[in-house]
Length: 255
Image 1 (cartoon, one colour):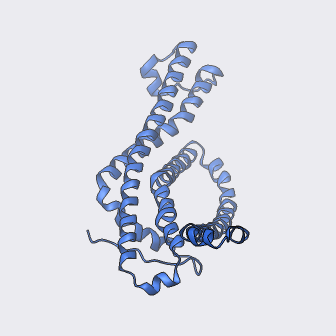
Image 2 (cartoon, one colour):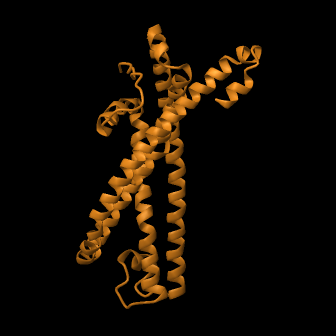
Image 3 (cartoon, one colour):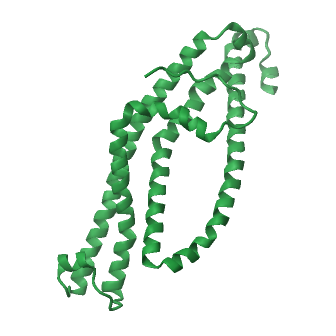
């Protein structure tokens, strides 16, 4: 795979297209296809366990806590018989529910550990590439950009990408799969009631778009401020001997 060299951009201006950024980041995942496939399998299993929880609670309520007289599920009849004792049935369903929650916990732990390892390798690759790119730049570039701002990009900005790959990506995929499962379940149980509940989705979409736009602007301002603070801090530390030699500590603090 050819080595990618990320450009040294500056904050401000028009935000980058999210799709284009995603396509540029996608090659960093290519060397980890096997682990990503395993994570995908765990995501599917975790989603099924997530959906099993509410289903089992519904079975416990409808069949054993407040029986509605409905037909007992086939899998439960095969497990306990056609007319199970209420206490025994409730105990069995609660044990299955506990097993589902334990499975969710175990799968989350495994997913997190695998994805963090991938994210750390991606972080190492990015930082190495950025450092190599810095070494190739001319002196005029360093006249226009302060060392502290470059350090902020090398450390802080890449750490944000690492956080996205480490936890944000799996969480987003899990939420999307769970949401799809919920929608399918709602349509299967009562499609009329499901369509009525979907009426609020346009409002949710509008609120999400507005919030995302404001959050993106706030995030960009935050990254810019972090870069400025890092540049000022680096300048103060690098010039501490001169500041102390001329007794300018108070003046620097007031700045």
